[in-house]
Length: 135
Image (cartoon, rainbow, N blue to C red; front, side, top):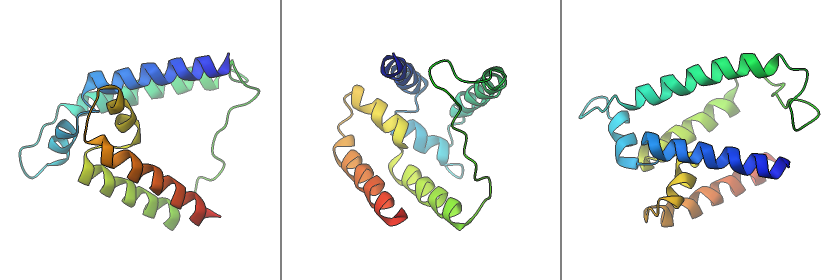
């Protein structure tokens, strides 16, 4: 049941990313180009996601535990440190250069985007290297 719920949630999330334009690197790069031909339409997507999360978190956290697990997995580490900032910088650079972050990149596979032939292996290699470096 947990795997089915996770698969359905991922499918819904990916469909939302594709429908909103987040899986289109040209739209994302247009949003990030604030000094040029800026496309502010993704602000609505981000505002909607933030509002949905804020309301959803308040409703979910009131429960003693999740429906399909024994506890919530909330990060205990809340400090902003160099590791967090460097990871965010690398993420932002990759997003700004490629027009994709991991979620929309995976959603783009379902859309048949040929640009992902170079991005997905590089992303997987980056995850693997980060895991090796963390150890």
